Image 1 (tube, rainbow, N blue to C red):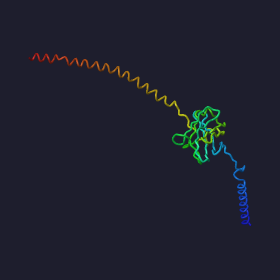
Image 2 (image 1 turned 45 degrees about the vertical axis):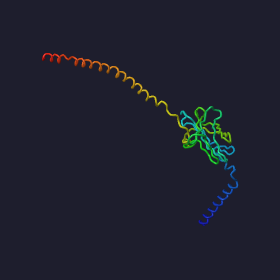
Image 3 (image 1 turned 120 degrees about the vertical axis):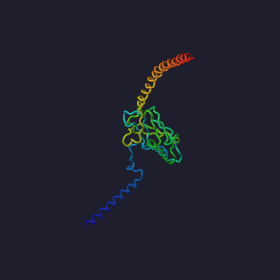
Image 4 (image 1 turned 60 degrees about the vertical axis):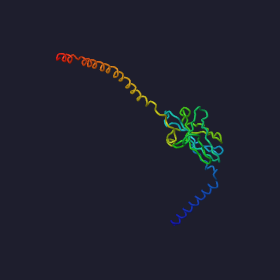
Length: 230
């Protein structure tokens, strides 16, 4: 009886799994159950898809420095696209684009993708990002492509912590570190050289040489001795 019960339970499980699988296949890729959107913003225009878009600020709220736009852009078309600019409508900030290697435009090859943000990837740096964006807000971001045109979406503004730590911007270098090194060098090079060059050398050169030269020129003992003998 126990063996029969086990076989019956396994058969029931297999039938249930088959029904679920067939139901999912019948629903198709457009089923409501498959429309699961991530927290990161995503959109598409024509053959261009933008996914995982965020604006990442400095890890500390008080830290000064730039912010960055991170995203993945897919090109499902048959021709290459160039990411000409990234703008933040409603702000005056500039976004500087940099390819992953070297200089030049950020290109999205046909059938390929480009990643903005993270080590070894292209970058979109927002100068003055702390003043233009605030953590927790949704910032409108527009990607301008050479063929498709503008692709806009609302991106979450998040600090470079946790999952976003490796995608965030670099902090500005600390400027005050250069002040102490310059102060002692300037004071030490000017003050001691002036007295050492003027005061000690002048009397030492004039005083001892004058009497030494005068003593040798007084040839009285030699002259007198020579005259007496003759």
